[in-house]
Length: 191
Image (cartoon, rainbow, N blue to C red; front, side, top):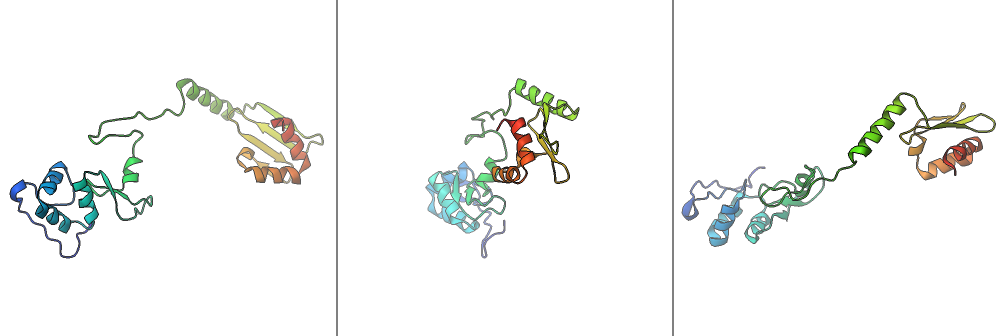
C-alpha cells in the first residue's frame, strides 16, 4: 500500500520506543497511542485510513475501510489492513486474538460415509448401474447409477448424462414435451 501524499517516515521512537509506522500495528502501538495523543497523531499521518488508528485505540480488531477487490467486503483488519473476510476464509478453523484454534473444522463425511461414496464412484466407473428403465414404445431410456446420477436418452432427440442436475422447471418442461421420457422417468424415479 502506498503512503498518502505528504506522509513522513519518522525514525524517532521518542518516549515509547515504538516507531510510529503504520504497516503493522501491535499491542505496543496501541498502548503508546492510548497514552500519548501526539503518538496517535504521528500514526495517523502514516496511514491512508485514520479510522484504522481510531479502531486501534478503541481496542477493536477490525474496522470499515475500502472495498476489497477480491470479495467485495469493507471490513479490514487493524493489525495489517488486510481484508477481514478473505483472512477468515483462508482456513477451516477459527482462531482467537492470540491465534489459537477455537473451533475444529466440520467433517463433511464420516469415514464410513467417505468409504461408501468412494465405492459408489468405483461402481459407477466400472459401468454398474442400479437399473435401466424404458418407455413402452422403447424410444426413451433412463439409467440410474449408484452415485445418484441419472442418464436420460430419448432416441434422436435427447442424450443427457446428468439429467438430475436440470432445474425443476427444465425437467418438467422436458417431461411435458416428451411423454415417452416422462413415462421412463416415472418408472425410474417413481413420480
